[in-house]
Length: 451
Ligand SMILES: NC(=O)c1ccc[n+]([C@@H]2O[C@H](COP(=O)([O-])OP(=O)(O)OC[C@H]3O[C@@H](n4cnc5c(N)ncnc54)[C@H](O)[C@@H]3O)[C@@H](O)[C@H]2O)c1
Image 1 (cartoon, rainbow, N blue to C red):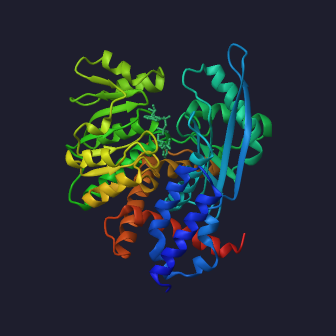
Image 2: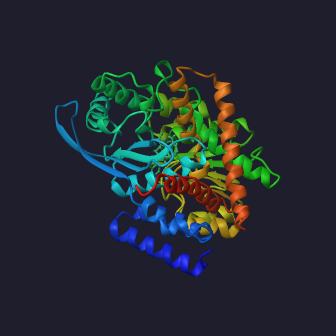
Image 3: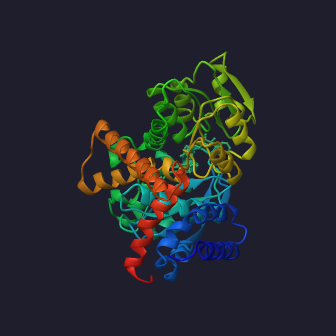
């Protein structure tokens, strides 16, 4: 056992090195700080992790790929974007993590996402390592043909780094079934291999898994329901806010409604829809999944719904908040408003949607704060189920797959809860998730020697 003071000093030094070695990558610094702040007790117990520099190694990606993505728009104009894939950690399985297309993408965002993915994937109990990729390409307003040309160019460079035993990407912001299709097609063409396990989130007719589109949102909702159960409560009858209106948000709303909750608001990057009588999910699906329109249009179908351009969804009173759009969408002020308005649970469908001030507010208020690393792990877990079906040349029914997802989420909740309890911090899911996720990866790294 090493003294806590010495461990804290060591971890602080590691964090400072990360900041120095990765200048300007503020989201990455934030993600590392959040994990290192909770690892003290586990490191004090296992000094071998320090001696072998496991934490320093975890903070340095195994490989980082940055590449040019040239493409032509419908008018023939040439555009150059930047592509990224950060292959962070393969101690417990091939790199696994989504691809994000959004103009804000740069190395610091991909690194924060890849770093979080290591621990999240470990928590699922499946054999998957951590990675993440993307591009600063903005798909908004682009035609189908433009999207296809971009995806083809992106994969023409990245394909050499992928493979079912090496690195298996999936979707994220701006990348859904359509984009995965174009990337899979180009990968197949370049490699002359029908390698189903190289990408997940595939279409059902060509190797995809039922429940994958629903998995992140459903899983996050299951997690929150478990956290409420511990408090002798449930989602039944609760008023909920779900930010975003993309993949994660839509299926979070669906599962909340199935479990008897009422979602009264959602959003997109332009504004917020508030519908006190409860959101019309079929309309949101039609607007977002089929017609790819803005959420503002919702208000023209329901006269009792209110649209606020650039509104703040967290000002609407609720009991359960499910941030499902993007990073740092809840700050300390938003968190304080939520708590003041009676919010009892926050379930993060998005990755790192609450900034450190916001997390502190939730933890001080002792509400059920469910961090993304644990809460939104259902998506990647179901990606791993997709890989299992691909390996078996099999496909399971919706019911069977959803049962497995639910069991995984109940298991992740239990693991995080028990771990926090074991370390004397009952109810602290941040600590529980970080420590439980870390130990498995760290032990595998020790077993593999210095690589
Ligand atoms: N897709 C998955 O399986 C999965 C798994 C785990 C975590 N996540 C995380 O969930 C979040 C949403 O991903 P998704 O797959 O639903 O993407 P998506 O592209 O389907 O939807 C994203 C939504 O967020 C909104 N949004 C984006 N940037 C915003 C901003 N700056 N302000 C307000 N709204 C904004 C968009 O308008 C859109 O409605 C991301 O943080 C992602 O990393 C996704």
